[in-house]
Amino acid sequence: MFFKRIFDIIFSILVLILVFPILVVISICIKIFQGGPVFFTQIRVGKNNKKFKIFKFCTMNNEKSIDGNLLPDVERISKVGSFLRRTSLDELPGFLNVLIGQMSVVGPRPLPEIYLNRYSKDQKRRHNIKPGVTGWAQVNGRNSISWKEKFKLDVWYVDNQSFFLNLKIIFLTIFKVIKRENIIPENKDSMEEFMGN
Image (cartoon, rainbow, N blue to C red; front, side, top):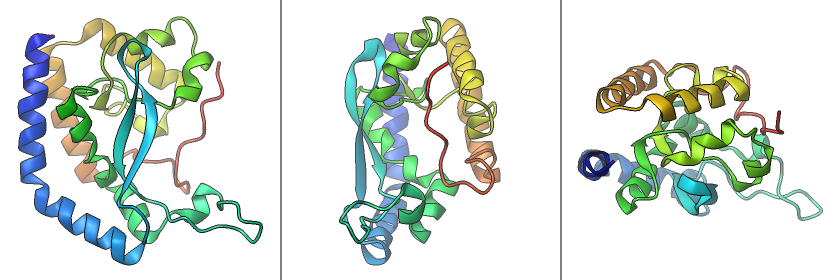
Protein backbone atom coordinates (compact mmCIF):
# COMPACT_ATOMS: atom_id res chain seq x y z
CA MET A 1 0.00 0.00 0.00
CA PHE A 2 2.97 2.29 0.64
CA PHE A 3 4.02 2.05 -3.01
CA LYS A 4 0.46 2.67 -4.16
CA ARG A 5 0.42 5.90 -2.14
CA ILE A 6 3.73 7.00 -3.69
CA PHE A 7 2.32 6.23 -7.15
CA ASP A 8 -0.87 8.18 -6.32
CA ILE A 9 1.12 11.26 -5.29
CA ILE A 10 3.38 11.24 -8.35
CA PHE A 11 0.56 10.47 -10.79
CA SER A 12 -1.84 13.09 -9.41
CA ILE A 13 0.85 15.80 -9.42
CA LEU A 14 1.73 15.00 -13.04
CA VAL A 15 -1.94 15.02 -14.10
CA LEU A 16 -2.68 18.32 -12.34
CA ILE A 17 0.38 19.96 -13.93
CA LEU A 18 -0.42 18.63 -17.41
CA VAL A 19 -4.10 19.61 -17.34
CA PHE A 20 -3.68 22.92 -15.49
CA PRO A 21 -4.42 25.02 -18.62
CA ILE A 22 -7.56 22.93 -19.20
CA LEU A 23 -8.63 23.46 -15.58
CA VAL A 24 -8.29 27.22 -16.03
CA VAL A 25 -10.33 27.23 -19.27
CA ILE A 26 -13.06 25.08 -17.72
CA SER A 27 -13.23 27.33 -14.66
CA ILE A 28 -13.64 30.41 -16.84
CA CYS A 29 -16.34 28.74 -18.97
CA ILE A 30 -18.30 27.70 -15.89
CA LYS A 31 -18.19 31.23 -14.51
CA ILE A 32 -19.21 32.84 -17.82
CA PHE A 33 -21.84 30.43 -19.10
CA GLN A 34 -23.16 28.85 -15.92
CA GLY A 35 -22.58 31.30 -13.10
CA GLY A 36 -22.32 30.22 -9.50
CA PRO A 37 -19.43 28.28 -7.97
CA VAL A 38 -16.78 26.61 -10.12
CA PHE A 39 -16.36 23.61 -7.87
CA PHE A 40 -18.93 21.18 -6.52
CA THR A 41 -18.23 19.48 -3.19
CA GLN A 42 -20.17 16.70 -1.56
CA ILE A 43 -19.64 14.37 1.36
CA ARG A 44 -18.61 10.93 0.15
CA VAL A 45 -17.54 7.77 1.96
CA GLY A 46 -13.95 6.56 1.78
CA LYS A 47 -11.79 3.83 3.29
CA ASN A 48 -13.19 2.31 6.50
CA ASN A 49 -16.35 4.41 6.04
CA LYS A 50 -14.44 7.63 6.71
CA LYS A 51 -16.25 10.61 5.23
CA PHE A 52 -14.60 13.33 3.15
CA LYS A 53 -15.47 16.12 0.72
CA ILE A 54 -15.00 15.18 -2.92
CA PHE A 55 -14.08 17.88 -5.44
CA LYS A 56 -15.64 18.08 -8.89
CA PHE A 57 -16.37 20.79 -11.40
CA CYS A 58 -19.86 22.17 -10.89
CA THR A 59 -22.14 21.03 -13.71
CA MET A 60 -25.44 22.53 -12.55
CA ASN A 61 -26.78 26.03 -12.03
CA ASN A 62 -28.81 27.14 -9.00
CA GLU A 63 -32.10 27.88 -10.76
CA LYS A 64 -35.16 27.60 -8.55
CA SER A 65 -38.87 27.10 -9.09
CA ILE A 66 -41.50 29.75 -8.33
CA ASP A 67 -41.84 28.44 -4.75
CA GLY A 68 -38.11 28.89 -4.14
CA ASN A 69 -37.02 25.26 -4.33
CA LEU A 70 -34.17 24.10 -6.53
CA LEU A 71 -35.32 22.65 -9.83
CA PRO A 72 -34.71 18.90 -10.44
CA ASP A 73 -31.09 18.05 -11.30
CA VAL A 74 -31.90 17.21 -14.92
CA GLU A 75 -33.31 20.74 -15.41
CA ARG A 76 -30.33 22.47 -13.80
CA ILE A 77 -27.55 20.83 -15.82
CA SER A 78 -26.08 23.47 -18.10
CA LYS A 79 -24.72 22.89 -21.61
CA VAL A 80 -21.22 23.33 -20.23
CA GLY A 81 -22.03 20.92 -17.41
CA SER A 82 -23.46 18.33 -19.77
CA PHE A 83 -20.29 18.52 -21.88
CA LEU A 84 -18.09 18.13 -18.80
CA ARG A 85 -20.02 15.07 -17.67
CA ARG A 86 -20.01 13.41 -21.08
CA THR A 87 -16.25 13.91 -21.43
CA SER A 88 -15.55 13.08 -17.75
CA LEU A 89 -13.72 16.41 -17.40
CA ASP A 90 -15.84 17.19 -14.33
CA GLU A 91 -13.84 14.48 -12.51
CA LEU A 92 -10.42 16.18 -12.89
CA PRO A 93 -10.55 18.05 -9.53
CA GLY A 94 -10.76 14.61 -7.91
CA PHE A 95 -6.99 14.38 -8.28
CA LEU A 96 -6.83 16.97 -5.48
CA ASN A 97 -8.49 14.36 -3.25
CA VAL A 98 -5.85 11.87 -4.36
CA LEU A 99 -3.06 14.29 -3.53
CA ILE A 100 -4.56 14.94 -0.09
CA GLY A 101 -4.74 11.20 0.53
CA GLN A 102 -8.51 10.79 0.71
CA MET A 103 -8.67 8.88 -2.57
CA SER A 104 -6.47 6.77 -4.80
CA VAL A 105 -6.07 6.95 -8.58
CA VAL A 106 -7.66 3.49 -8.83
CA GLY A 107 -10.33 2.08 -6.56
CA PRO A 108 -14.12 1.81 -6.15
CA ARG A 109 -15.86 5.11 -6.90
CA PRO A 110 -16.74 7.06 -3.72
CA LEU A 111 -20.49 7.26 -3.22
CA PRO A 112 -22.80 9.42 -1.04
CA GLU A 113 -23.06 8.62 2.67
CA ILE A 114 -26.80 7.99 2.31
CA TYR A 115 -25.92 4.69 0.60
CA LEU A 116 -24.04 3.30 3.63
CA ASN A 117 -27.01 1.52 5.18
CA ARG A 118 -28.18 0.18 1.81
CA TYR A 119 -25.23 -2.09 1.03
CA SER A 120 -25.23 -5.82 1.60
CA LYS A 121 -22.52 -7.22 3.87
CA ASP A 122 -20.39 -8.18 0.88
CA GLN A 123 -20.91 -4.85 -0.90
CA LYS A 124 -19.65 -3.01 2.18
CA ARG A 125 -16.22 -4.52 1.54
CA ARG A 126 -15.75 -1.91 -1.22
CA HIS A 127 -14.86 0.42 1.66
CA ASN A 128 -11.92 -1.73 2.80
CA ILE A 129 -9.68 0.34 0.52
CA LYS A 130 -9.49 3.95 -0.64
CA PRO A 131 -11.98 4.96 -3.33
CA GLY A 132 -10.59 5.91 -6.72
CA VAL A 133 -10.92 8.45 -9.50
CA THR A 134 -11.38 5.42 -11.74
CA GLY A 135 -11.85 1.74 -11.06
CA TRP A 136 -12.56 -1.76 -12.31
CA ALA A 137 -16.30 -1.06 -12.56
CA GLN A 138 -15.60 2.13 -14.55
CA VAL A 139 -13.75 0.23 -17.28
CA ASN A 140 -16.25 -2.63 -17.32
CA GLY A 141 -19.48 -0.86 -18.06
CA ARG A 142 -19.47 2.14 -15.74
CA ASN A 143 -22.99 3.62 -15.77
CA SER A 144 -24.34 1.22 -18.38
CA ILE A 145 -24.46 -1.62 -15.84
CA SER A 146 -26.60 -2.10 -12.74
CA TRP A 147 -25.59 -1.10 -9.23
CA LYS A 148 -25.40 -4.79 -8.29
CA GLU A 149 -22.95 -5.47 -11.13
CA LYS A 150 -20.86 -2.42 -10.24
CA PHE A 151 -20.55 -3.44 -6.61
CA LYS A 152 -19.60 -6.97 -7.62
CA LEU A 153 -16.78 -5.54 -9.76
CA ASP A 154 -15.72 -3.24 -6.91
CA VAL A 155 -15.42 -6.14 -4.48
CA TRP A 156 -13.52 -8.19 -7.07
CA TYR A 157 -11.00 -5.37 -7.34
CA VAL A 158 -10.62 -5.23 -3.54
CA ASP A 159 -9.67 -8.91 -3.59
CA ASN A 160 -7.44 -8.79 -6.68
CA GLN A 161 -5.78 -5.37 -6.74
CA SER A 162 -2.21 -5.17 -7.95
CA PHE A 163 0.15 -2.65 -9.53
CA PHE A 164 -0.25 -4.14 -13.00
CA LEU A 165 -4.04 -4.30 -12.69
CA ASN A 166 -4.00 -0.62 -11.73
CA LEU A 167 -1.95 0.23 -14.82
CA LYS A 168 -4.38 -1.75 -16.97
CA ILE A 169 -7.33 0.15 -15.48
CA ILE A 170 -5.64 3.52 -16.06
CA PHE A 171 -4.93 2.77 -19.72
CA LEU A 172 -8.44 1.38 -20.26
CA THR A 173 -9.88 4.51 -18.62
CA ILE A 174 -7.98 6.79 -20.99
CA PHE A 175 -9.17 4.72 -23.96
CA LYS A 176 -12.81 4.74 -22.83
CA VAL A 177 -12.81 8.46 -21.99
CA ILE A 178 -11.49 9.24 -25.48
CA LYS A 179 -14.23 7.04 -26.95
CA ARG A 180 -16.74 8.56 -24.47
CA GLU A 181 -17.96 5.07 -23.75
CA ASN A 182 -20.52 4.17 -21.02
CA ILE A 183 -20.36 7.64 -19.45
CA ILE A 184 -24.08 7.85 -18.63
CA PRO A 185 -27.13 5.86 -19.66
CA GLU A 186 -28.59 6.86 -23.01
CA ASN A 187 -30.97 9.84 -22.87
CA LYS A 188 -30.15 10.49 -19.20
CA ASP A 189 -27.99 13.05 -17.41
CA SER A 190 -27.07 10.96 -14.37
CA MET A 191 -27.38 7.52 -12.82
CA GLU A 192 -30.42 6.61 -10.75
CA GLU A 193 -30.03 6.66 -6.97
CA PHE A 194 -29.02 3.35 -5.38
CA MET A 195 -31.97 2.30 -3.23
CA GLY A 196 -30.54 -0.91 -1.80
CA ASN A 197 -30.72 -4.58 -2.67
